[in-house]
Length: 283
Image 1 (spheres, helix red, strand yellow):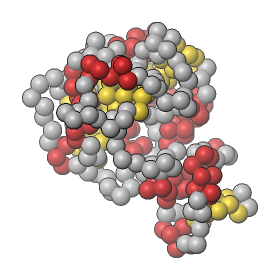
Image 2 (cartoon, one colour; image 1 turned 45 degrees about the horizontal axis):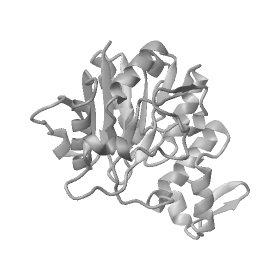
Image 3 (cartoon, one colour; image 1 turned 90 degrees about the horizontal axis):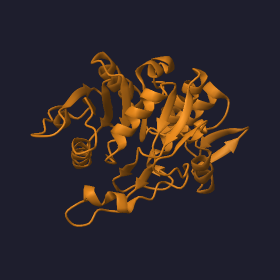
């Protein structure tokens, strides 16, 4: 059985280097480490001196509207073409817990019809000198909006709306059944929930795996992510057209409370800027 870790990145080089270290020191090294460099020439030339050798895929992209869904598909395609049986997707900001790769590989081998997700802890800013990989388990506080699954536990029949692409794994055959992420999604938001719908529509189960723990490195952001307002609105409308309901409802409602969006006739619209509404492909 061949296990591949697939990561997509644009910038975040220091975060990616720490992820690489975590994968190189885990209980099981991945057989393949596929890194999709989205319009990132420096990353496309990345060749670490030691540890797991990354296979870097250069992927043209508009940095202002990164094609996250298409990039993940490109990484998975490269992994499958190289003979991967198990596909582990890990966000570029995520550090792998020591057991993550081994846990995913074992679960996928035992239950190949399941899309497995692992708990992710959002870390505080690093201390001087950076994060200590050995000390990360002591900081383990998984995101409270996801199942509170403990090490050693597995949960099947999970809510597909709680799926996220920060950390998940599935068998190659399961991936092919989903046909991958919908590439109509561009920029931030929506493609995760859409993929979960594709997976369940293909007859796959959704599960959570307590031993596949990861740690999300801190970076500045906004809550809600106002910097991604345009792509979130566009992608939310795309999701509604495909599945008949709104995703990311918490964010949309908070944007509404802040006066950035308004609802008319059951549709969300940008406030006071019809030209921008047209530019981002919504009307």
